[in-house]
Image (cartoon, rainbow, N blue to C red; front, side, top):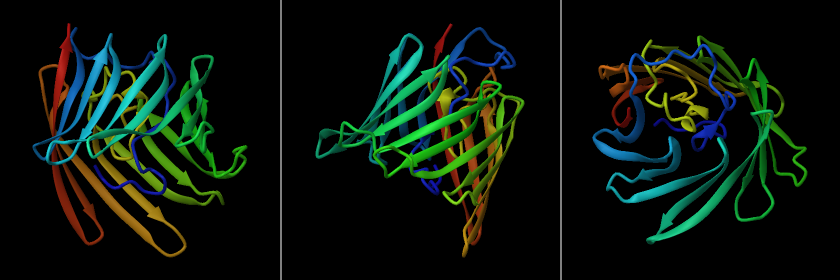
Length: 266
């Protein structure tokens, strides 16, 4: 989807915790919808493979259909403990890096990030309020990870991520996101692992689907502003089957369409 800003280069993790809140609204169906294929502008972009209701593999494809990269997910009991990321180079699978997950009392408190070494090169740490992540802080470029790089603050409304503010190492705000939602089921509602993800223009952690996202980034010189709007078609169980996303930004606009296919477990 849209280009990542600051250090959001890939989809990254922001945790609720390891169990859903009591306030999560169950869908009006006994069927569980697990997202299996995501299409972008008519092209298969991502595939998802499960085992016992756990996401085991996520694959991303080039426009031509060739495999671009994939991730493998490992668990201990119900807890996600490691993600290995591979990219394809001349038909060879190359391990690009992996993440290890550390928990305390059922809440994820730290992710260690490895790439080309047995020692992590970065650490993400998480704080919570009412079992929902309220702050995500990252440290890097230091063997003991005392180099503070910045953080995000999160605010929720009705089990949806409503506001995100990003701060740099000088604790100056450099990014801000504001979201509005429909009242239908998020396409990733039953994908427990993906429910623990935050993507800057698709908060998988939220119960519902985004209707609009206002994004601002700024520094000492530049200020950028964009507004994303989303419209959906739904199935009889109120899960989205397709989406049209329109981006309006300084100097222009763009439109992309997405469609969703599911595995139904009844």
